[in-house]
Amino acid sequence: MSSFQKIRLLLILLYAVFFLGLWTYDETPIPSRVTLMTEETPALLSANNLWLAMLGCYAPEGTRQVEVGKQQLEATQKAIEKKDLDAFRKAALIRRPTFEYERELPITLFEKETLISYVTAHADQAKAFLQKNEKLLQGYKALRAFDRYEEPLKISYFSPTPDFSLLRSGQKSFFMELAMIAAAGNMTDALAGLKEDTGFWRFVLRNAETLFPRMTAIGCLRMDFKFAAELADHPPISPTGQQYLDDILMPLEGNELLSPKVVRGQIGRILAGLALESNFWPKPLLVDGFFFKPEATLNREFLKQQKYIDLAELSSRDFAQAVTDDINISKINPPLDASFLYNPVGEILTRLSPGNYFPVYIQHGLNLEGVRRMAKLKIMATTEKISPKEMSQFLKTHATDLGNPYTEEAMSWDQDKGKIFFQAPLNTKFKSQYF
Image (cartoon, rainbow, N blue to C red; front, side, top):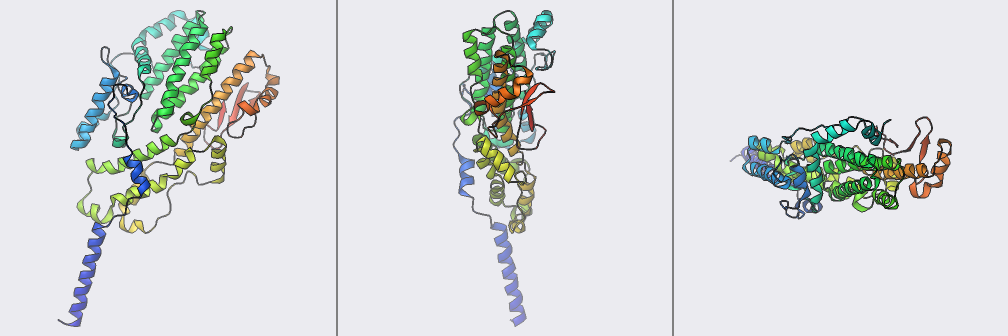
């Protein structure tokens, strides 16, 4: 064998070893990422699981919400296991209720006309609205009987999703019922009902594991706080009613205020989704071997997202400082590095995956404490008969306990709008929060 032939054979062997190594190579899983993806989750299919009942909130009369939700989740899980895309689509779609209902109230809440004044002036229309929404309201109230909350994180965004808009409509119908109770002179009973609603959504807020349920709870609690201020604007309030108001407007604490559990759950959901995608969309053999590395892809996604777990653990003041100091807080994709050479498909997938919304949604949760404080201030100002000209000084007096949650300075007063407000740190359309 000539020297040239030996060199050619050596090159062939080297290339063979190189391509075999490229075919078989993948990164070692990051331990903390593995922990996040394999954390034990209690049994989802418990008869007391509120999430299942929320999933089955469209259940027809005579059937239990939790059983309907359980059937839908099991059908979805089976479709994923069988890699049956058509069955999955049928199982995972949001189901609409078979009963009729009015989605919106006949007036816009918290604008010029209060709900109590509406039901007083339009009693027949209010009764007709509640009669049409009777089944919706019954289903909404029935959700309060559940004392556990578990989400199916392991099947990620392939999970069916509860119809949260239906729950929001249920809450509005409940407000109409409470307004009629209050208008009939039973303000204490109305406040007792609102306290129960607030307790329900605080339970969801504390236990939510992903963004959609948490954001729904935040939105519903904002409505609870605003409706509390509206009810308090119709004295007299009995001592018992005042205690209910105090309970409704208790400060947010722990998982009610901070959201690391939700951010961890959402990141785990994204990672699980990337791992499951090959069930329905398998890649060609060459792509899987040479251009896509599963572990490297999951590692990259985890490293991209993990800073938001730390961000979600910060207090309001520390969060404001963090997002002010880091102008790139929402720019999460790091520069390309050597991993692109052996995992180009994975790099593209992770750059397309969501995640930069985390700071905005973390701020929504922190804003809720500010809304609670403004509701408290509004009720106190009404009780103490503070005039618009006196509001700025009144707000300064309560800066320590009821100030801007991000600065602990006094809330601001907009004389033209006649509203209390504060500024959130991130420059979004929700930067200014008014009450």
